[in-house]
Image (cartoon, rainbow, N blue to C red; front, side, top):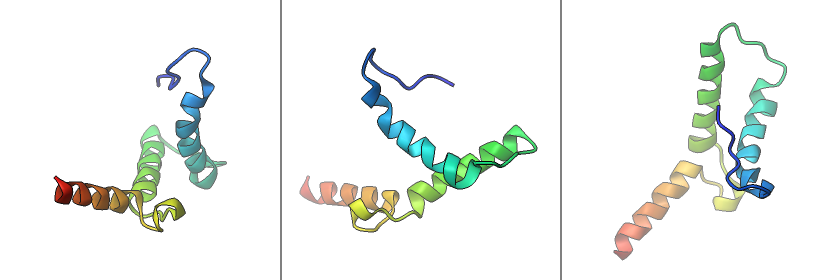
Length: 80
């Protein structure tokens, strides 16, 4: 793994990643033991899929991140 810090002394650069990765560690990974690395990786990928494709976000009108992005791209295409 690589550190996500971009600039020296700018700890807030890391806040969005910490927020994202804090959620699965508490919601689905905390206290669990995985038999293999693959099992852990599968669970992380399942979490990312859920977070992006199914989880509804209040700040985006209670749609998933993917739906919000899809709508945004469709709007941009209509304008161009």
